[in-house]
Image (cartoon, rainbow, N blue to C red; front, top):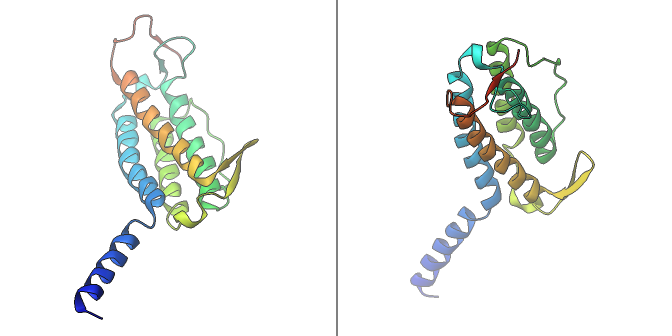
Length: 169
């Protein structure tokens, strides 16, 4: 066989290997970017505004922070096939520091839980609450919620931008 064939074979094998885990690469990239954004926005929110809600039916910023952490633990444990850690309950009335700590820990947990996932089992059926879904769809759902949470936090961080905004605590 000709040397050019072996060069082409080696190049295409390396290229294929790079694309072998597109879904896993996607979730790791999204986790890295969105965790930095969500944590930064949470740290930037003044402690006295954690009770702020853009309108009466909306969550407070503190409730949103806990919601993000809870969602991370649920989805990342299920997607990664690792047990959800037993954590003490914390209330949305806890200090900013405790809420930020819980949020950071949830993203650290996701990084660990998702570290070894690959695309080979992307079609595996998972149970998230009462719903059946594929691992790939669970990943898309999780990463989509991170993007939504970044956008929500931007709304919360705009002081006085929402008419009728209320503070509750």
